[in-house]
Structure formats: structure tokens, C-alpha cells
Length: 325
Image (tube, rainbow, N blue to C red; front, side, top):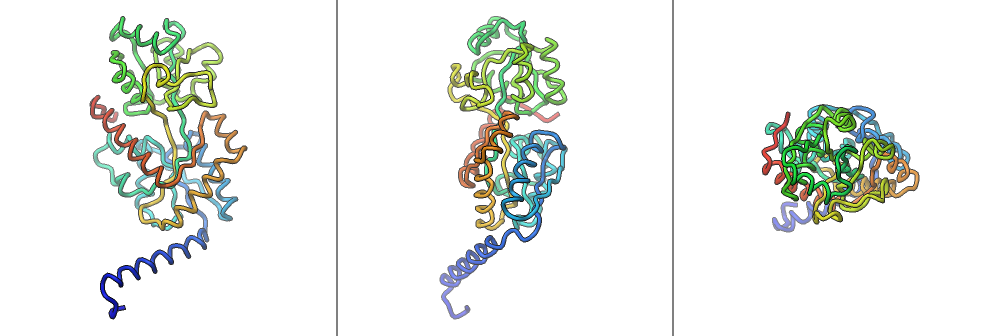
């Protein structure tokens, strides 16, 4: 091609590369896909990954192998994905903790979320629920705000650890309302919920699946959900925004990512197949049991979402001087 002008040569190379990507996507996949999960078997990320992985394997005619790589707030799995070949055969079930929170709490990570990971689709969101111990004289968010302002520093809120979504949700609540609450970090959602039930702690922004049974039994009282819209798992609960805090929204979320450089046609195929799976009635029913709301956004929208989440958590973490345990 040396006889073509430089600009024309660049355009021809671009066309050839684009065509080769399309051809690769038409053949893709020709071998099993590894789906990395940043959590141990049995957790929320693992549950969603196994449902999506099974259905995706059936759809594309290749097995999807679940590879659990837990630890370090999910950054081990994210780092492995970022360093893998950009061919569509390594996919990450990323979660908000490892994608947008941990990179701001740990200074020496070997990957950059926005540079090294290509968003495919937002799989699901799981809201937290603002719950209180029954002894707390508050039946609404408005009541809780008034109570907390009347008794500054006497109300404690629990979280599953420093920098966890349940912690950041509480800090966002404090910032939005001007109330003063003391944060108490536990080693996981289970111990935190148990402390709340025992009355050791008064308030928690807890994962919906962890507290809904206790709300139904009367051991805890739910005031609102933290998502932008009401959840199908508890449609009677208002959102924080509906309860007088416009713009308040924070959820744990899970989405598929591939290494940056993965052919666009391959990314699009993964998105289309996964989006279709998330709309199937049986998948929606299984997600609902975990309090998960299926989404299935396209790659461009998911990228904007991740960028927005990154900015939101940057502010919360910096404003409150939050550091990793």
C-alpha cells in the first residue's frame, strides 16, 4: 500500500481492521469463556454470574466457566481481567465495590477502571434498605431525621466495612440531611445486621436480601429504599428521594466487563445476548428473589453510568476522608 497517500492508507487500515473484527465476532465464540467473579461462591455476584453464565452458554453454544477470585474488595478479579487477552474469552462480573469504590480507597492497584476495563452491560442493581431497630421511634425518613437532629451523636449506623456501599450510603444521608450519626464498621453484612437486630446499633443501610425477612417478621423496621425507583421486592417502600431527599440514589450494582481493546463487534454480541437473557421471565423471577433488578443497558450507556458512579463516590470518599480498613 506504499503507493497510496498516507491519509488514505490509514483509512484503508481502519476499514480492514473493522472488517476483521466483524468476521471475528461472527465466529465468536469458538471456545469456552471464563467469567471471573470477584467473590466467593454463594455471594450476590456469584449468584448472578451463575444464572447469566448458564443462560449465556446455552445461547452462544459454548460453556461459560465460572472462576471465583475473591479477596481485596474484588480487585483481584478486576486486575486479572484487565491483564487478560482482549479477545472476548475473559469476562468479569464486576461490582460497584471493585469497579468504582476500591480504586479510590487503594492507592496501589495495578489497573485503572476507566482505562483498562471496557463496560459491556449493566446486569443488575440491588438497592439497600434504610432500616432501624424497632425501639427507634421513627416510622418514616422524616421522623428519623428529626430524631437524629434532636439527639446528635446518639444514633449509630452500621455498615459491612469502611468504604462499603452501606457505609457510603450512610455518609451520603448525613451529607444530604445535615444530621450527625456515628459510623460503626463490622466485618460483613451478616454481623452488622445481627448487631442491628440485637439493638446494639440503631440504623443501617442494608442489602435488601439481608434484611427483608427480618422486616417481614417485625424484628426490623424499614423506612425507605436507596435506589432511584421503588423496588419490586418491596414496592410499598418509598425511595429516599420520595421521602424528601431529591437526587439521593445509591445501589450495589453488577455488570459485565472485558479488557480494553476487545473488538467492538464482540462486545456488542456479548451485550445483545446478555440483554436478551435478562428479559426472560425465568431470569427476572430468579433475580427478584435476591432483590436484584435486571437492567441490560448498552455498552455506551453503561460506560456513562460507570463514569457517573466514579464521580459520585469520589466526592463521598474525599468529603468524608474515608480510608480502607
